[in-house]
Image (cartoon, rainbow, N blue to C red; front, side):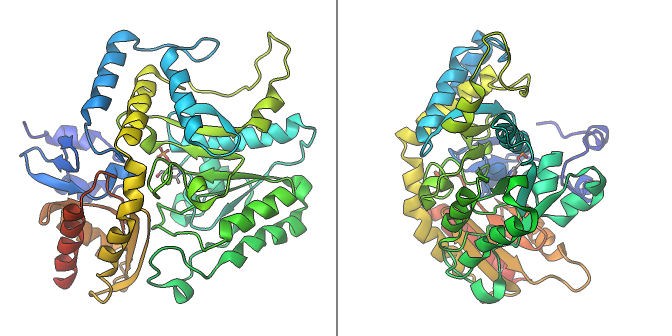
Length: 439
Ligand SMILES: Cc1ncc(COP(=O)(O)O)c(C=O)c1O
């Protein structure tokens, strides 16, 4: 495969990347199959991140590839405004069938960020349609990542994502993060400390009055910030308080959806059903961009009041339910079912968790957390150079140990495809242990 020219490398401004450093020695992957990426020279790299929490079925699975190829040759594009095409309806029905409670309707988007926008807009519009137009305030949580749209930035809780754009953000309040190292360090699974933090929603109700609050949005397990499993009982408590005050509960399941936690959705795993549930990534195993929002029947019905010629929701994207993405979603969801991949994630959870916790005591390891097939390690930062130790380790592992994972500051995150074998788990954490020992 021919090497990229300097001009080509220069032209692409990579997102969430230190570009100058990257372009000195680019980390390029050119091909993928199953659990592996391959660079331009054919070097094989174990994918311990499912790409970017996406490829839950593994890479380039033939059934998904075929579905996309056939879709491209059959129906390249069809609008979803006022028209429709079969695969989008099929995909919506398959997704809704996986969801708990009355989450019966799917509003398609193209990404997690658009899904956040959509869910919050639907929440505010729902209250207005019911005659409670004063409910506009959104409650997020510290350390949350809901994507990079202005709704995600406003409701999200990651300072670097917010501070540059604060002037454009809308007012939102934030619950305290559920993570507390002193109370929870090296927990394998759900921390037992922290359910009481859900009570902060009561405090915000007391401060602002419920009549001003539209929704509370949380990731059931905060992913991008470094895998923060919810404390036992926290989500149930949040659900109860939200219901008590007529506040809609939105679960951002962009990472936790489609088997990551050993169930179709985290909502199922934790036995807590939100009013709106966002998804993306794993819905197509990353093979085509797609996202969406699962919407509770009561919210959908609120807008289905006619008259017949009038649009019920002034929202949507040109590519909502795109034929290629919809075909990819249908094939992906069938694969998850046929191969029992969600159950597989649950079965492997113990082995995966024990494997990563075996790194406790290695140099600079400050905490390890895990649930399902998601896990993270916090490293002690280098004085005056926060993030450098994690970043350097990610590069060493990619170039010298042939393992790719995600790094966020000094936090290393692992979320392999759900087809991962025990030998892969041994390899990724074995090699990480060697790299840590060499620090
Ligand atoms: C929980 C969560 N929400 C939203 C997003 C944003 O998704 P996207 O990058 O597809 O816009 C992400 C991305 O990682 C995410 O983890």
